[in-house]
Amino acid sequence: DIQMTQSPSTLSASVGDRVTITCRASQSISSWLAWYQQKPGKAPKLLIYDASSLESGVPSRFSGSGSGTEFTLTISSLQPDDFATYYCQQYNSYSSITFGQGTRLEIK
Amino acid sequence: EVQLVESGGGLVQPGGSLRLSCAVSGFTVSGNYMNWVRQAPGKGLEWVSLINSGGSTYYADSVKGRFTISRDNSKNTLYLQMTTLRAEDTAVYYCARAKGAQWLSFDYWGQGTLVTVSS
Image 1 (tube, rainbow over the protein chains, first blue to last red):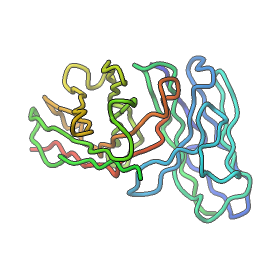
Image 2 (tube, chains in turn green, brown; image 1 turned 60 degrees about the vertical axis):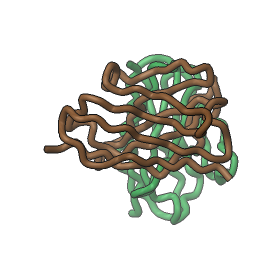
Image 3 (cartoon, rainbow over the protein chains, first blue to last red; image 1 turned 90 degrees about the vertical axis):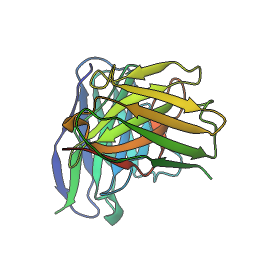
Image 4 (cartoon, chains in turn purple, green; image 1 turned 120 degrees about the vertical axis):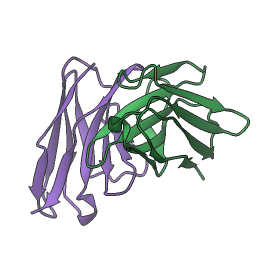
């Protein structure tokens, strides 16, 4: 299985900050990567797919980049609603879909 | 409006069985790539299983041979039959739709149903 490693595990930031979360794959996954936001007690919400495509309805302050084994999610200016846990997910093959362990974004 | 509503969770003893359902409205289960994803309490997300529009099925190694994904096109409902349940299967189980055959990112999710495996 392809392992996905996110860093950092926890990130403390303030409203208005620019933040970046990194996701590394154990082998190349081309651009088959998605990012999700999850709030407590809720289902995940798709933010980015194919590494850099913004899902419909998601604010443009969210952006994704990368290919191969290294990917980043950037939030250009943190809003109060953005404090949540973020997951990356690779979908390189049907029988091997895996998520990162998550990054908790908390208020500084 | 798109809705996915899971049901069937509950408390089951180790070694027991349970069937989860996901009733879908707003699109057809048969025309989409449908998935189950689970999340153990306080833990991250784990993909469990996929059924594609052609009916082919795929499973995570952790559930292969114990879980079966299926669908009822007439009821527009997705199922997950779980057998030989273990304590480590305790989780909230979500059904989710993949954006497409090449884009196995999940754009619609249900609210989840909790499965607790305990004696």
